[in-house]
Amino acid sequence: MRRIVRLAIVLSAWVALSGGAAPSPPAPGPEEIEGLVRLLGDNDFHAREAAGRALRGLGEGALPPLEKAKASADPEIRSRAEELVAFIRQDMAARAVERRRESERAWLKKNLSPLLGASVPEMPPAARPAAPAAARPAAPASARPASDGSPSLDWLAAHQEPDGRFDSVRYGARSRSDVAQTALSLLAFLGAGHTDETGVHQITVRKGLVWLRNIQRADGAFVEPGERAPDGLSHALAALSMAEAFGMSGRDHWKSSAQIAVDYSVRVHLSKDRMGRHRGYGRAPNSETPDLLTTAFFLMHLTSARIADLRVDPEAFQGIKRLVEELRDPDLGEFRLADGLSTSPRATTAGCFCIVMLGANRDALLSLMENALDGYGTPTAGEADSDAVFNYFATLSAFYVFGAGGFNEWNASLRQRFRIRQRTEGDEAGSWDPSGEWKDAGRVLATALNALCLEVYYRYLPVYKE
Image (cartoon, rainbow, N blue to C red; front, side, top):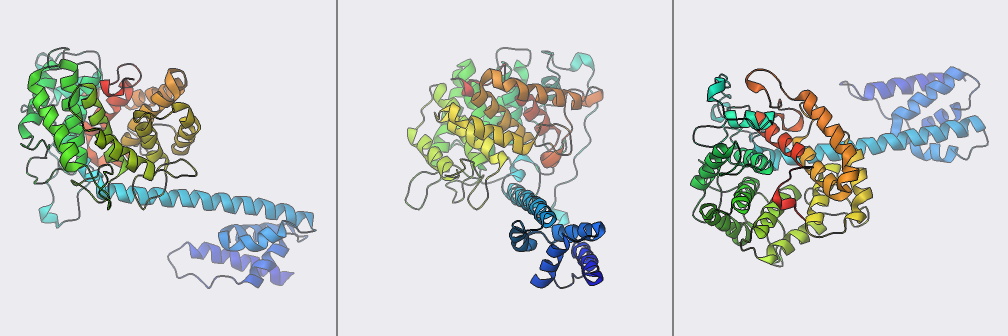
């Protein structure tokens, strides 16, 4: 018996060492693991506990003998084996989820984060962008734009550049993403009912739209100044804001810009598969690797354009539908962000929004959305675990899948947590600190996306009208 107790102690030490920096000892063999399983029924309580700790640490490798032990004639062995099997399988599932999340985070960092200003590609230090400049001093009250009672919109209006853009780097972004962040900021104003002709922020809206129109290429693409090629996400956001502006105001001087943006989206940027069929949208024109998030923003753009009576080729929607269906797990119904990734709550919220926009039956999505929201947790802003992009799609999807009644619980939690973290003093009053997975995208992105989340239930954009 002493030999077995010593075995349990040694194996417990092996489990501890295997997680450290020192080289791991050889893994225990089948006979040693079976000896630990037998020890689960030992008369000595401490021996049983030591064996349990060692088996838990061995994880998946201990499952076969533990599964067999669930049928043991010894009730103590049987009971402990059942508990250990449940623990190990739950731990394996949690680790698998975390691996999938890490894989998704790595994909986002490589493919989409740079477009929103959250990261920069690896490059020599001398080639990196300069550190963000300090925020400008607070303007005198008399020089600030009029307020509509929305602190977040007031902050955005007060921090717009004279040329109409929103300077992403100046307010904390690691890489320049003025097109995307200007577009998101404009969408927050438009979603609250401000246009270039109406509302206290009409001058802010007009200046932002003029800046976007001025940097638009002749073929309709919105391209970051200084860059040669358009990025899908930035173009989709800018094109959406221009389509919304035209749809809400009906003014012809936005129509031309909105229409050629649609033409570029459909004729140039839309991806095709190997059979020549349209298949969603990616970062590059006619991308071989389209993804769900970029495609979702293009779907918003084209839906808004269609509502505004702009010309939109129906084939674009068929291409979007094709990709969305391909990125959906046929058995679970969940979604993944791109080929090669696993399904995730983040992707599933975006996927649910897409299929609702494409005309799917919402009732069939109720349990799927509930599981996605439960899997990701409570929405937060300005905290270490915040995910501004997930919050946006989760809020949109919750509103359109659950309806006003079922949405209230999600919205109440979101509003409470968002308001707690919203800055209330100084030049940053009304904004949110950049945080979480998009921390390096800066204050403008955080504030614009959070403002859009808070608008969803009572003043959402025309693109979401039924």
